[in-house]
Length: 95
Picture 1 (cartoon, rainbow, N blue to C red):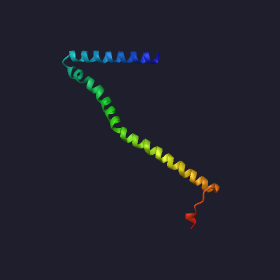
Picture 2: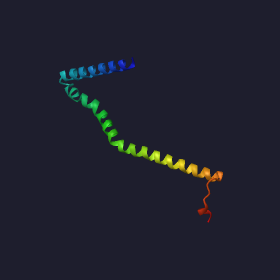
Picture 3: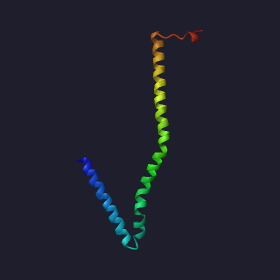
Picture 4: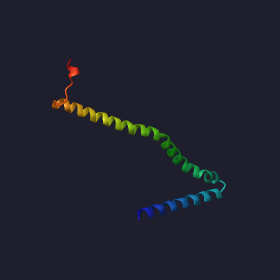
């Protein structure tokens, strides 16, 4: 039901934008707005989409970095827990 309502809202919004574009182009004093209306509306969306696509490699690097850091922290936790319990001894440090 919510999907149908969202689809209906999108259809009405698109129809309104097309009608507004047509209506603004009818009059000479608003023709320039009508000619640029779609660009004014969709350029920011296009820019956000392209910036998101260019940021994907950086986001993937951050995801890999988070996984590696979590692994290192868990390994260090196991090491220091073993030292605290006495199951791991570091004889090379004591000399």
